[in-house]
Amino acid sequence: MRILVIGSGAREHAIALGLSKDPKVTEVHVAPGNAGIAGMATVYPEATAVSNPEAMLALAEQVRPDLVVIGPEIPLVAGVSDVLRAAGFKVFGPSKAAAQIEGSKAFAKDIMQAAGVRTAHAEQITPGADDAAIEAALDRFGPRFVVKDDGLAGGKGVVVTNDRAEARAHVDAVLAAGNPVLLESFLDGPEVSLFCLVDGETVVPLLPAQDHKRVRDNDEGPNTGGMGAYCPLPWLPEDGVQRIVDEVCIPVAKEMASRGNPYSGLLYAGLAWGEQGPAVVEFNCRFGDPETQAVLDMLNTPLGEVLLAVAEGRLAELPALDWKPGYALTVVLAAANYPETPRTGDVITGADHPQVRHAGTAFNEAGELISAGGRVLNVVGTGATLEQAREQAYAVLEQIHLDGGHYRSDIALPAVRGEIHI
Image (cartoon, rainbow, N blue to C red; front, top):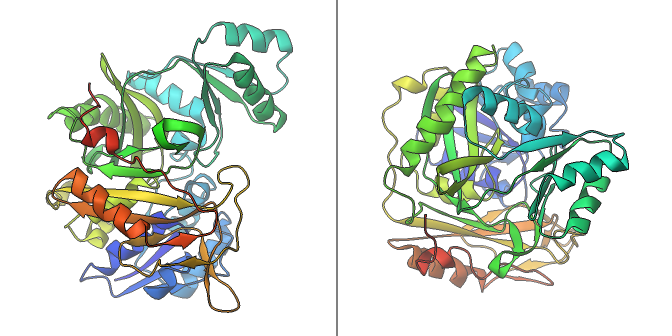
């Protein structure tokens, strides 16, 4: 089986690595890929127009894959999967219409309301709203404000703050960019990331994970695309995953199918588990980054077989997924000045290790590995205990040098210490 993966980050590196271990997968092609992926698959660094359906169709016609796996949200929201499917290619990833579950937070809220899924109360502010309307809307929220860009923002379009002035500033910035704003009530409780394979109304969960969004230790600093993650969750109730599937994912899948937009691909539910159980913070229409790096490292079932079953509409026929025992953890090494204005071009040493997943990397003219993005690379650790997984990941990370690079030292530490409770 020949597979084409669209994307360039550590998520795509993890997907390509998982596919390369599938005995039925003979070729892995990745567009545009990165320096790390180039060592294990055929990459197309010139194929940077991943959100251009016609460009991706031209590439697919060149590669002639048996399956196309779309990693990032931008090409999915742009309708790349629709164009590829219309041309006869099998695709893992939802249609443009179904991808609105991530592309529009207002759309997601409408789906959840119709499906009876618990989520935060929300109000939308549209460009052109006057000052009085904005202030009145802010009056109805707080004292902790959650302000979201209604469109795609790479995980960085959310401000959670007790400072009303900061909340207003983000409202103004998003509106000035021509995008609607969503104000939400704050959901209390520990966060859970649950990936589910979805094929119409069939839903199969993967391992639950927890992401660390803030840039600095102790959940301080601005939101990022994610600084690390771990799975599974030792503090989640024994029936936790099934409750999320039954109370959130299946109702949403059924609602979308009833509207004529059946979901096919990976549905990511980001939740907060409060006193009343799980409530949705957000949905993503694809594998989340960096949780994917940890979750896929635990999967024994051949990945190509799984993704192809979803693309062919036969997920219900797939045997139960087989998982390794123990835990996996990933830590992100970020570039200097990330997430504000990441510096690129710095040389990276010590990254030649099988536990490294490349994200924003490239080679310079001298053949040296350099930073080429904000989140530069991830290190994955595994172990019989979460503490062992942490130790393994950080031991490798300490051997890697990137001038100005930074990472959080506390990924999964509250869970190891038993400080997370429901």
